[in-house]
Amino acid sequence: MRARWISASALTIVLAACGGGAQTSAPVASAKPAAPVEDTPRVVEITPDMGSPHVGDPAPDFELPDQDGKPTKLSSMKGSVVVLAFVTSWCPFSKAEHPNLKTFAEAYSPKGVKFVAVDIAEPEADYRTYVNRVALPFPVLKDEKGTVAKSYAPPKALPMLEDRTRVVVTSTLVLDAQGTIRFFGLTDTAHFDAEFVNAKRAVDAVLKGGT
Image (cartoon, rainbow, N blue to C red; front, side):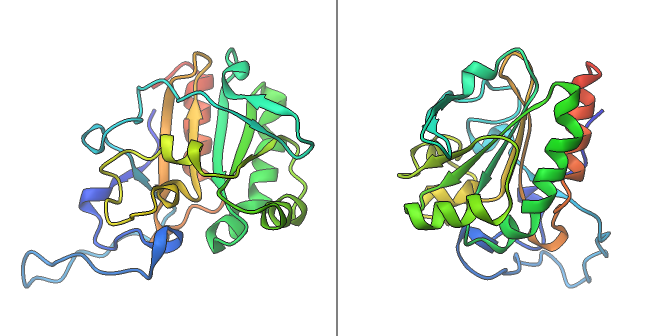
């Protein structure tokens, strides 16, 4: 069972959002009006042609400090399904999904799913703004220099963004128990999935042993 995707190359409305700028329209190939798009939650799929990491790749390992300064290593969570969220204090989409991230964790942690958030390239005060806005029941790691965020930004995903830390702002991944990426979705700003509908479907599929 797969979550509902749309390919970045097929988007009529380009993801810009927190990546850096206002939404813009892609060139229209013909004079015919575009078919209406269902107003349902979606994500932008990271496809293999964009480069690694993508679905099927091992998730790049990292170690970062949490809210209390305690080092947390991603690979220490192997053996469990993991939801990895990249967040910031300033992105309106991160703000909108923040309370739903807490609800997501509260619903799935009893099923053995682990959660971890990575706050991208923010000074201490802004990091604390995110941490204190909604108390999350899992580690919120501080990627102060954006090194981890860059390691998760495929080279050809959103190539217009010179600041590669912004590619994964408000993105969500699901990793299986072996640490393999089974879901990697960037934000579709036109059909924003604030309640993690697609990520939940992916987690359910992994828990059931699906693809």
